[in-house]
Structures are given as structure tokens and as C-alpha cells.
Image (tube, rainbow, N blue to C red; front, side, top):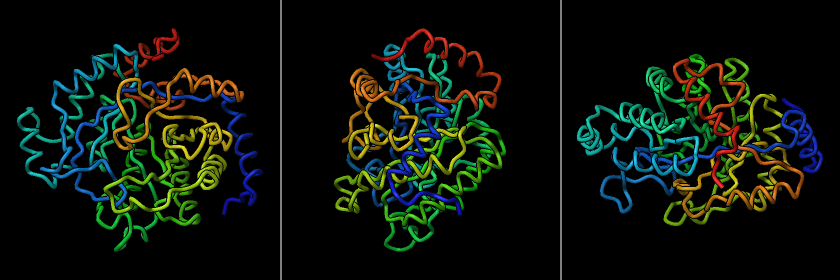
Amino acid sequence: MFSLPTELPELCRRAREKRDARSRRVITYSPKVFLPITNLCRNRCEYCAFRRSPGDPGVWTMSPDEVTTTLDRGRTLRCTEALLCLGDTPETAFPSHRATLAAFGFEDTVGYLDACSRWALSHKLLPHTNAGILSAAQMDRLAETNVSLGLMLETTSERLCQSGGPHARAPDKRPALRLRMLAEAGELKIPFTTGALVGIGETFEEYLETITAIAGLHARFGHIQEVIIQPFRAHAGTRMAVAPEPDLTTLKRAIATARLMLPEDVSVQTPPNLSAGDVVDLLDAGADDLGGISPLTRDYINPEFAWPHLTDLSRSLEDRGYALRPRLPVTSRQRANVRASLEPFLVQAQASLDLGVVPA
């Protein structure tokens, strides 16, 4: 087993040193527009406030007009990433969703995602899709229009899938299923984002197993570009509405552990709107990336938690010796794996960032 310091200050110190040797205290983020394509989902994770079934209050599927209007606004606000996010395989559970897709002119969700990604490219935005479980063929298709793909591993704990656990009613959260998709993405050499969810009932040993699994996949395939260490946040109306959230110590230990266990070419990301305390505290634990931050759209997965204002965030980081810089939704190390047809879009987006054309 990987040897880790037992005391938190020493753990964080070593994680910072490893991070600083690579990034020199430059913290990155992606200027994004969030496209919640549909919140229909066949899974019923006990902590999720995003998913809906047909007929539920707040259910939606974005129409083509809604997608392109949002892309227009995102481009006007100088975003460079279009994040496409949705529930797992909704057409396998809901015939009404298949009918909606047919009305839009598409046979399935992946076909619609491919079209949305092409619309994003036409608006000079780089697509990154997190669509839940996909087959290798589906990922291969989306890689033609997406510079990267994502799937949160969340946890490798089978125990949390048992009756009464947070994933008991979520068939697509079985660890073996998600690990297989991550491996297939590696075989396809697709730049990939994954992560761990902290505080849903896992033990620290189970968390270590999750990070070990991600590190092992990257050792085999070299395709993991970033690992999100995301804290559980309790949402009203869910079965885990009163479950305890991870405290700052737990989250810092998780981030520092991930930084020390993962190779240097993999970023460790912490969402700045979900942090238990000041986000700088989490950077001091070794994180080097803040993920996507939008000047336009809210965090639809965690709608109660607003993105920080970039000017205020940058000033706060500078006061603590960090520099905040925008990035593309694919890292420079993974750029060689992006399909050749997308290179002109990458060049154009990179030029925008180099010129400082980013949201205020």
C-alpha cells in the first residue's frame, strides 16, 4: 500500500510540494457554459437532486433551440467549454424520452449529443460530455466531436450498492460497470475526466481503493487528465437530506491523498462552489484545478451553490500566493489524443485564452 503521512499538516505539505513542482502555484479553471441536456435518469442515487422522472416537477429536456440559444450566450460571454451533462441512459427507462428525441429528429440520446456537440463547435465552443455509462462505440462516436469525455467513478465500494446504500437503486453506479467504461475510454485513447465522491458513506480505506483504481487505469492507458475530488452536499427532498457532509479536515485529507497517489500529469480538481470552507484551504491541500466555472449558467447538479465571481476568486488566490489562469477542457498533455479534425477548433480556442478573451 502507498505510504502516506498520518498527520494532516505533513500530508498537505507533501501534497503541496508535489503540486508546486508541477504547476508552480498556478491554479487553472475552464470558462464554461453548462448544458443540462436532460435531467431524466434511470438511476435513483439517494443524494441526487438533479434527476427526474417524466411528470415530476422540474423535469426537462433541452430542445435544439434552447441548446443553440445557450451556446450563443456562452460564446458572447467568451466561454471556451460547452459541458454537456445528463442522466444515465434515459431512453432505456422512459419511452416518452424516445418520443421526444424522435420529435427532435434523432434516434437516440447519443445521436442528439453528437448534434449538440457539433452545434457547440460551430459556436467556437469545445464540447466535453458527461453522459453516464456509454459503450465503446458510443464513446468513439462522441470523440469525433468532443475534445474530452467524463464519467465520475465516485467509488469502487460494492458495499454502497447494497440495500439501504446510496447506490442501491442506481444500476449504472455499479463499480465494475464504471471501471469497464474508463478502461474502454483508455483503449480508445480518449482524454478523460473522472473523480471520487467524498462523504456518501465510504470508509477511508474504500476511498483509497477508489484512487488506487484510477491511478491503475492511468498507468495502463495514460488517458486520465484530471480527477475531481467532490464533496457530498446534502439536498432537500432527497433521502440523504440530513446525512452529514464531509468536514474540511476530511476533504483536505482526501485531496492531499489523491495528489500524492496520482501521477504528476493528472490534475487534482476541487469544485470551488462546493468547498467546505475557503477554497484556498483546499488548494493548500494540493489541488491544482477548479474545474469549470460559468459566467452564465448555474451548477445544475448542485443548484444551491453558486459559482464564485472570477474577479473576487482571482484576488483571493493572489493574496495567498496563487495565480488563477483559464484553460481548455483538454489538458496540454492529452491534446495529442484529440481527434485530428478537432485541432483547428483547439487552436482557435487556445488563441482566445492567450489573448485574455475570457469571462470577467
